[in-house]
Length: 410
Image 1 (cartoon, one colour):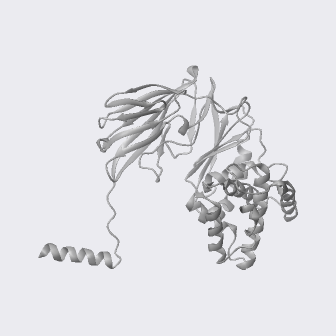
Image 2 (cartoon, rainbow, N blue to C red):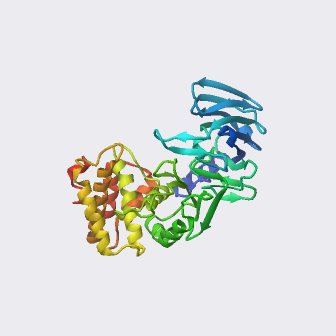
Image 3 (spheres, rainbow, N blue to C red):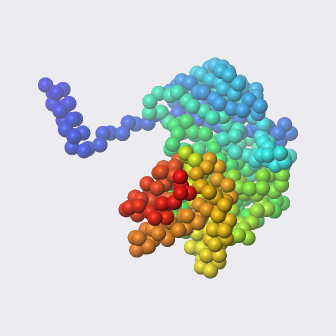
């Protein structure tokens, strides 16, 4: 009888809307160590499972077989499945997996998107740590740290993750139970400058003697940062911006908590757009396109590269309108916005569409809402199609958009 009453009481609580108790998460220790070996253009990686890791029963790895080699384990079994795939079955706390990985990576025929020299290294953590899926007991999460072993004479290392003493970093991605240290890493004889213009620590780093002006970049970011927080809402805890000159790729490459910026690129281009704020928009919003909708991510990044600077007072109304007119002329050749990879013409046309949509939203809501309200909805979605973009816009407008009623979206 008591059990029946208890059951009825439990059902009554659920029916009354009282939330069920959240299950307690069980943790295990996960430590990555990256030992940099410039003479070999390699890193030796150690992945160690600590206290609580008996809850981890199987780890599947996917990697570039041309760059990864010399896999060994201290405990458990390591079994190749096919080229570039393997399974590690650990044996609880104390189990380690070690391997080597080549650092330098080409980006095209004559440039690089990762490089190691005798004095410094610049690379992404997700390119030296394999893609990992783990089989674990229910409600298990990792407490993860990243450490480094630096060559003699190398004085500094930084990542997009919060720093601890002794070149260690806290890796905490709420979206994953088995964390990986993704994002850009710079190490060696490098100089860094940092500030905290709002809720985010911003670090700008480059090899010593490189042309990147760290203070120029940091000053401009600090000047505009209030507009970034106003437009996008919550920002990352930390953002690392790394730069280097030739033969690194002459562009910008963003990651969830960091970005690479070629040191000879201007902070603001002659056409009025900002390559720096373009990449920062990618980092903060993390919006990407799906279903032939790359125009959304690239269009928003380029749109905000103009708007953030203008809103902060770095551009007059007259110059802003001139920038948009140039983009109108540039984007006339775009027959459709729908594509997997947005071209310069498609991006230009997308920016003009977003500019016109922003004006429509402001006019129809008496300036109560604007394009930022749409962007914040997309920021939660992350992967966005054209149909999802239209739905988010209609949600903000409370009805159909005349600007979006265009064949360019078909």
